[in-house]
Length: 246
Image: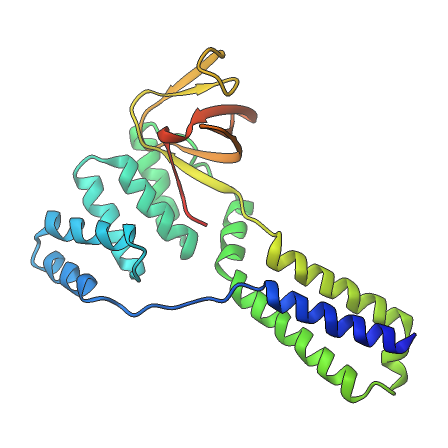
């Protein structure tokens, strides 16, 4: 019976690691350095174009780049773009200062979806440290499995309470890696973006959104996103909403 437990742990842990997704890093590009140089020279429009290319091409960028883009877009009165970049920055680097800035812009221009609660700040912090928490849990799992096989004759590792607890730990780790998700958000990008009661052009019309409003996505169907609005479900065309990346 004991051998079955150890073999199960080894097999389960091997499968667990095989489902883990590696994280790749990229080097900063000359294009980013060129864009920063243009920004310092106050050639804002040219630098903004380069920054946008960097973001669209999935190249490495700095958090400061997002703040610069948000500043320039706000100066151009393109608040939907400014809020998009501020949200990108905030999701990766939670900051009360950026949070207050978003709330200020939203209040000034009548944008909705930026009322934060303490639980929202906690979620963002947790998302920021997701990988560090995962690394720590994997270290604990590797260390435990190693000790188990080196000292398998110890009575402690033979106790059913330990074995059941560790199996639950592995199951949670598997869930954390493969199924734990964060709520998706999107910024309205078009004028007169219609929010409908059902995913149909003939459904009941609820409201029109100006660019820059933020909605929480709860699902999708065909060309529609299902979103949360006034604590109710509603639908908006995908083309009218720019989704914030995970």
